[in-house]
Image (tube, rainbow, N blue to C red; front, side, top):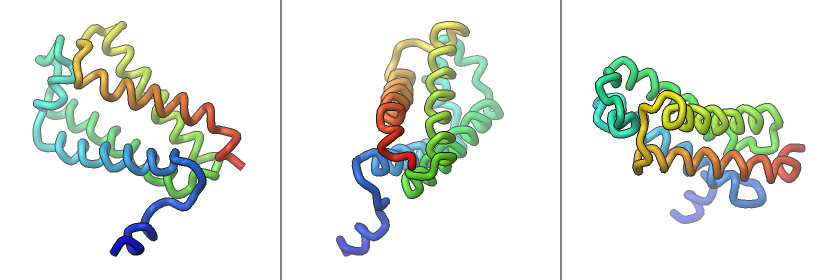
Length: 137
């Protein structure tokens, strides 16, 4: 069994491919969860929960799932420049979105629902930028 599980993991040096796989899995699970409720999305946009509709929540869910697919693909193709670049942009867009909701549109509070994606997107973005030359060939 352990050898079977190991065969499913990305084959590459470093920890970034494993991080991409983990974040992709978390995003996919979060997407599934958000398809059926707006409660989680309302926590993210805590200052204006009335603006969260089922349609908006599902649209956000589809973006999150799309990003998960790109990140999953990156975990297994981390040396591919196009895939790496697209993945890097998913984190940049996520960071911009969450930052703008907090600072510009003022729909979010500094709560766990916001801090978590800000930490993941900023850390992943910086990590990918720092390791760009190591992975992209």
